[in-house]
Length: 175
Length: 346
Image 1 (cartoon, each protein chain N blue to C red):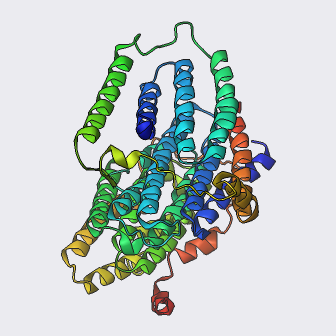
Image 2: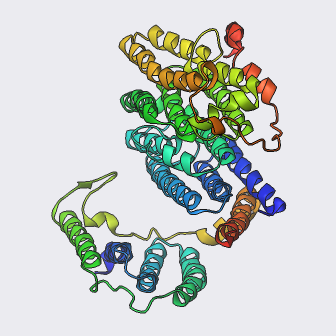
Image 3: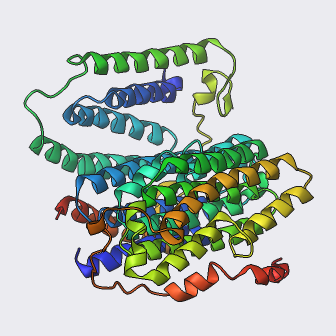
């Protein structure tokens, strides 16, 4: 089972995406986002990106999702929608689940699956550790490169975030 | 809106388009598009009423979908070519998805449905920015990937856009919707020649922007958003009726005005490449466009449009100062004799 851990994690990833795409109340969407964030972190870590996985947990789940949870808790309604409360939501959720199950069975049964890119069987998902990743891990070196060669990216993304705050304030201010 | 914040947001719109046009890394281009989209939302919502909010929401949803498709195309390109440099897109799947994404951003058929609705819901100045500046960024990316675009899809979208732009504008009396359908049709002309000679796309874009700027500024000057209101300009500033006549006929593509130049060049380029039916169809469908421009000129400049007696006077607001209106009018009507100068382009 451990050989195919990435495949299993990716299936859970897609299922949790279906879980919040079927539009329950945001509180439950946030709950499923926590699961998908954690599972996504697991996928990244399996590919050797320990730093990036840590970023997902700390910044995404621990920063952004917490703020999202607080704002949703302030704006929640008396009877929030769960997956089983509304026929439409349950229908969409079951449809998404069904499509994922069909895709998984297709992948497991057939030799080759080619949607946009080809991969042959579940064996393609297995990660083989080639051993030598070097002294420095890729994630940390990426951050170092971001602040040296990628200074322009930092400036642009910093400015975008700043203007994003300005825009949101302008839009919600009203008159 | 606070003038400092308004200036910042407007500069961010400019910065977003500049980043798109000057980047060589696909991710930066995507960031530029997002920055542009984010910053233009409060400009669209300058007047705060439900109509502008709805228009801004529609614009945001369609453009965000287009950005997502663009990102998917970028990632597929990355998977198949292994690099992020913007060159022609070698994988056909990525090319088709990217063309669809950029067509959604421009408002080409079959993704044109948002253009009239968004243009109608916002003020004239915001509509001006939407229909001129926002077309620059997607068109520059189309120019850069033009060697690899699937010709069938591109020409189908172009011809359908010209058809929809002409046909859809026939039943309109609201000036902003007329300008929106005119924009759809002109985008169709621009993308039709993209695969054959992209320089003409840029020429058409330049002249289209000049003419649309002129038209919008004339509308802003006479504070009119409907045909009825425009038909009263003979009462307020008779000179602008003549200018509206000239500019509208130039937009319709009539010689000897400058609007004829891009159409002439495009038809010549298409016939040089042995396609005869296509430019014939395009020229015939441009007549539909000409019809509703002529209807506007008829009601504005050529006749005194019937209205009740106490509606003939327009309320004299303080005259708005329109920058660069005379040079724009001159450029959008008298550039045709300069056509031989095109030989200096590559």
